[in-house]
Amino acid sequence: MTSSELPVNFAMTIDGAAVPAPQTFDVVNPATGQVIAQAPDCAPDQLDAAMHSAQQAYQLWRHEKSARRDLLLKAADEVLAAVDEIAPILTAEQGKPLADAQMEVRSVALWFRYYANLEVPVEVIQDDAKARIEVRRRSLGVVAAITPWNFPLSLAAWKIAPALRAGNTMVLKPSPYTPLATLKMVERLARVLPPGVLNAVSGRDPLGASMTQHPVPRKISFTGSVTTGKRVAEAAAGDLKRVTLELGGNDPAIVLDDADPARIADGLFWSAFRNNGQVCSAIKRVYVPEALYADVVDALAEKARSARVGDGAEPGTQLGPVNNEPQLTRVAGLVEEAVARGAEAVTGGRAPDRPGYFYEPTILAGASDGMRVVDEEQFGPVLPVVPYHDVEEAIARANGTHFGLSGSVWSADGDRAAEVADRLECGTVWINTHLALRPDQPFGGAKWSGLGVENGPWGLYGFTELKVVHRAGVTS
Ligand code: NAD
Image (cartoon, rainbow, N blue to C red):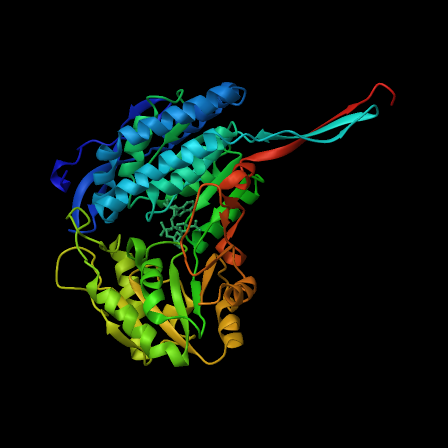
């Protein structure tokens, strides 16, 4: 399917029905810069309708534990049956290679199945003649779920699967840059889920703010930037809505002096450039000992030169465009500043002369802390490589930030790497790998990178509250 063959109409899903909005907004293909579709711009009364539908559906859904399991399994099948319909839409609006888009759609089914099969046992902390005390987990109610533009479908699945499994219902809002695949996926899911259990609305940023201020949701599950995450927390505070915040990262990789540059280059490169660097937990800065510095820079530059950049819809593309124009401007600005301050773009360092929001994969040598591209989250195809003298200094620099999403340590000696890994202040630390995620592995950020976790039973707990049932025994 090419951009011109995309469906013309995209609808929201409210109370099980496909619903257009009175107004629409443009969605652009970042590989061409051209408008490819119109997305519904949810009106205030439509948001109310979605919230109330979710609230209504909650009254039954919360009690239907085994039906929830069966329906999540059916939902997984429905998504798998729609891979060829949804993946090209995702590529067209997000920019990622089609094979990656297909993988992302399939990952939704993986998450649905994992949570369908996850049983949360009631814990019994006392059971004798005096008392039986059970610790149960009860659902919260309606969840407002808000997602970013880098992995619209998988990040939605990280919310939908545990929230619904636990008995909540949901109103989901994708990013205005990438609303289409989510709308299409939820439209398909409406074939199997009862009306109101999963609603999808689309609109610009103020719609997200309206969701966080709406009286119906009891929980906001948000993935996006630190700045917006703080606004979400503020909006939630007045009503004490529960929040989970999955926010930005500035993930360091520390290469130890016994690592073999040739062996680690591929892992390092793809952990930084996957999805064109637009991954919250991608490697965003690499600390390399002086003795290995030139070799690591060369090996990374070689990878960058050979990566195939292009329209994600073209077979063989490995790196697509940056998703949107403001992000491209930001990435280019960060590189410009670093170069002006003495860094060298060994490869890339410029936008190619072609339509769309492309930026050449860039390895920045001579980067140092204090440059914005090192201190901030670049979220694009640029990797600063920072030399260090001793490992204590590298650890201090890696931790010297408000971010704390993830990090990694690369070494020929796993135990030595593990000691360094232990000292990194982040939610996930990998050794000789990075970006390895699974449905059963919790994921969340330390410091400003987040609040709460997603995935595994812990992710489901975030959509519940404890409820203690303390029953006095006959003798008390
Ligand atoms: P963003 O914060 O601009 O937008 C995220 C979502 O929030 C969008 O749907 C947007 O419309 C909505 N929104 C905007 N203003 C809002 C408000 N005031 N209230 C409620 N919602 C509002 O982020 P982005 O640019 O779409 O995504 C990139 C960021 O997301 C990066 O910082 C990245 O690291 C982060 N991210 C984090 C994770 C994680 O799991 N930790 C995963 C992916 C992306």
